[in-house]
Length: 411
Image (cartoon, rainbow, N blue to C red; front, side):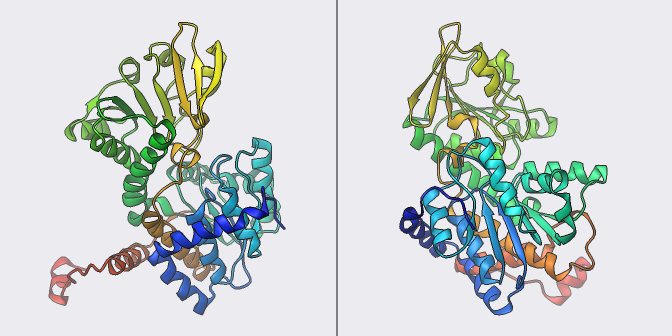
């Protein structure tokens, strides 16, 4: 039961999966443990995460644990068709196509839920939203789920606050071994991988405007600085803005930054960060990208309304000619640039993030009788277990507290 682009692409996808498997030792060790303990025996897992090689390997690890997997992507442009084909060739249920329409994307989400999942693995909250709006009859069978990203956790916290979230969701993104590495080092590198391979332009010497100075924004800014850019930060949070100043960046409102920026990266998790008032004052040739989960940070609808001409300037880059004669360039339709224009985070980074996902799902099953609806943190023991496994895979040893030291610290 699958709906993919082309099954003949499977050999290429299999090669990609084998490559990341070699570079994801923590997830591999968990897979070996799962093969022995089979924590998901008889359970169905619905997964909506950007469907590329690292995600595919997570799916196989969950399958090693006995899970019956139903898989789709979490963005219309981030699916790798060859990776989807590789999963289907080994019997997994996959509903995902690169470049699908929004209607097709929503149908794929519905298809992974229709069999009645016991565990949800979500990235952005679309599966959880569908369950609570269109497919509520399936909720009684749900043990719980895991949410991968900042945007999805925002949505979950709103539901929990309103009392509408009907099963427990583990906040994977808030684990230290996720956001401190995935969001900072992963996003930082993969955003510039996507921008550089798509534009083939120099970053050094340019003004790069990074909107949002959370963990992702810190990573994007640091890498831009390392590439020689003059970095400007825009923020709405005074503490983060102050931190950016202390880190050596210029900080100013977007209305001011729009006039000087050569490249723009939005990474706020909010909507309407760059809008019409900013488009009109930007430099001719300014490049706009979004690294937030949803394509709402750059007002693409507004840009399409005011543009007098739109054309393909280069593969995955659209040019928009404004009434004032200037042209703005948008990468990947304003969608998540590191995945819609690249391969996403490095395998070694997703090794930790997906290890947290796998262990959190196991935690839900083990504690299914005691957990209540709402958002719950990743247990500290899980964070530390992943960190120890990662250090071991890198050949790094650390000290351990003596009992006397533990007593001194009151542990």
